[in-house]
Image 1 (cartoon, rainbow, N blue to C red):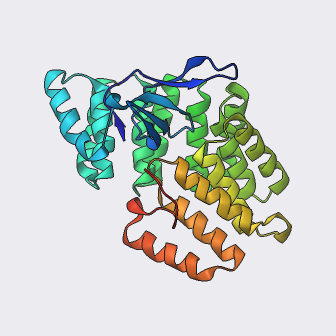
Image 2 (image 1 turned 90 degrees about the vertical axis):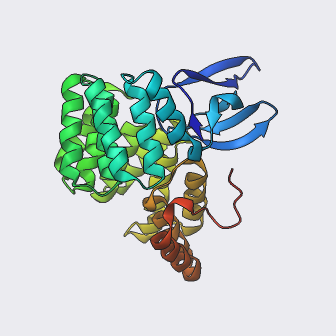
Image 3 (image 1 turned 180 degrees about the vertical axis):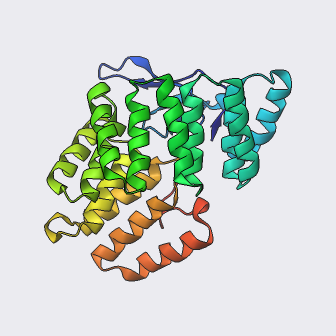
Length: 297
C-alpha cells in the first residue's frame, strides 16, 4: 500500500486507552496492511511503527504510478511526488524510470539531505556500485552533519563494502548523536557481528529491539546472527526462523536478504528442503515471496 500524500497521521491507543497520533507518514515507503476494520486500516511502516489510519488515505501499489503522474501534472515542482513515484516504479521493476524520478527529486530539493539519502538507498538496493551510495550519503551528511540516521546509513553501506573501520566510526557517531534511533544500534550490532564481537553485537541488537520491537531490520539482523554465527553457542535455528518470519511480516517490501536469512535459519534447524525451496524461489521472483502458511495482506 502507498500513502496518497504526505502528512497522514498514524494513530494508536496509549497505555491509558487514549487515542494519539504516533507518527506522521512523511516518508515514501510502502506500508504493509495488518488488519482492516470498517473505514480504517492498521499498517506497519518500514521503520516498525504500527498504527491505524483512514483507508481512503492509502491506495494499492499498482495504482500508485498513475496517481502520482496525475498529481505531478498539477504540481510539477513538488519533489515528494517524484520520490513517491520512484518507489512505485521500483516495485514494478522499472529501474530506469525510478532512477529518473530519484534524480528529479534531487533537482527539485537539492539542499534536502533526505533526497540524497533516498537515492543512496535506491543505489544500494538495486545493485548499483556501492560507491554511488557513499557519494550520495556524503552529500546528505554535508547538509546535515549531526544526523544519526544518515551516519547509520553510511555506516551500513561501508559495512556492505567490508570497510569496517569507516563503518564503525560512522556508527559510533550515530549512537552518540542520536541514541534514540534503533538504526544506529542495529547497524553497529551488524558491524560487530561481522567483525566477530558477538557479545557486543547481541547487546546492540537488544537495545535496538527494546526501542522498537516491530523494526523489521532489527529482527532480520538478530535472525542472521542466530542462524549463521560461526560460534555454535550463539546459534539458535528455531529462534532464527521465528525472527526471520516476523521480519518478513513487518517489512512492506522485503529485499532478498530477508529470504536469505530465513533460508539460513531453516538450514540451521536441519530443514534443508525448505531452505532450498526458498533459495530457488528467491532466484525466480523475490518480490512476491511470503513465508509458507503465513497470511499477509
